[in-house]
Image (cartoon, rainbow, N blue to C red; front, side, top):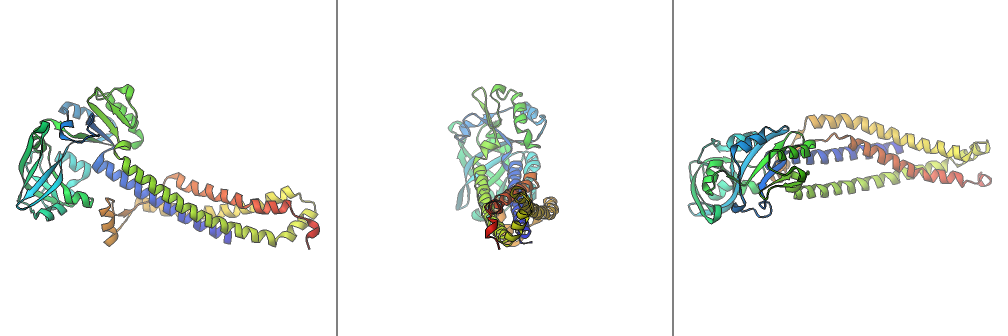
Amino acid sequence: MITMSSVFFAVFFCVFYSSFERGTWGRMLDNILNTQAGHIQIHAKGYWDEKVVDNFMFMDEATIAALEGIDNITNVSPRVETFAMASLETASKGIAVVGVSPEKEKQKSNLPSRLVHGEYLSENDDGILIGEGLSKYLRANTGDTIALIGMGYQGSSAAQLFPVRGIVKLMTLEMDNATAYITLPAAQQFIDMPDGYSGILISINDNRRLEETILAISHQSLVDSEQANDYRLTTNDYYEVLSWHLTMERLLQTGESNRAFLVLLMGILYVIVGFGILGTVIMMTNERIREFCVMISLGMSRLRLSIVVAAELFLKSLIGTMLAVVITVPLVLWFSKNPLELSGAMRETYIQFGMEPVISMATHTFIFTDQVITILVISMIAAIYPVRKIFKLKLRDSK
């Protein structure tokens, strides 16, 4: 019972923690890719290394429409992203200005749902949406007019007035304090670059078909298909297509750090469990010395006796593991289908870190199989002690 209980709780907590970590990470990554960054990005060559207006690209509506027709692509969002100084009366602040198509942005990031005051932009609107934190800093309300001053295309100055149409509550604190949205036509007029874009953000339905989708994009004459791979594509010294593995490199590094911490934590837990199993095995073995001697004296070979003892330990560990799996599988499946929504201070903390305030579980098969394999390996290592004891046992010394 001690052995099975140790195994049960180890597998139970490791499955839950691993499922929680991977579920939260996967949900955050999906949210970022589907609502902000996109699985694939198209830029002019050199823009990713130096994000200035002069490295923006031109793309006609026919090419954008052709991209929307590619299988597995769910959203194509042209963007104009630049920086400007926002000013209202005596307050001013440097902000990120994002030019979007209001209808496509509605499908991509559901921006209208984040409105806290005012109204959403129309396709040819000359207004602006600002973050709630930015509105407080500038003391701006709907109906006020904000002046934006920045750098336009080929060194031209960019300056324009934008009436505040609405105030939005954005996902992260940094975005909320320093981000504004305007329409694509207004952004192109602001930087004096008709049909110019900083990039095209593409969302896909199935991330497992990422490389296939990039190859399909290459067939639209954007890139040379011979150079196609799932990380970075370049073409005719103008366009480059980047997968999220490159554009989200820092986020991936953060994920790897979290994964390393998870492995370390589970490793510590399994070391504790391993010593717990070993302790019960040592106790069990020393209490059964006379039994072993009798069995050997009656003609049972030491090899067969060792196999029986090892099988006992294996079955105890297997029973504890299976009980844990049987109990955790329904719970994990339930929380994966019905994520637990957070509230209060924990909700605000999640939002500030750009995470959706829910607890979600991942249901990958390896989350369960890895725990089963690990426990059984630990059990087999612990079985070395009784096996060694049996082979070195001296019958004449036993009383």
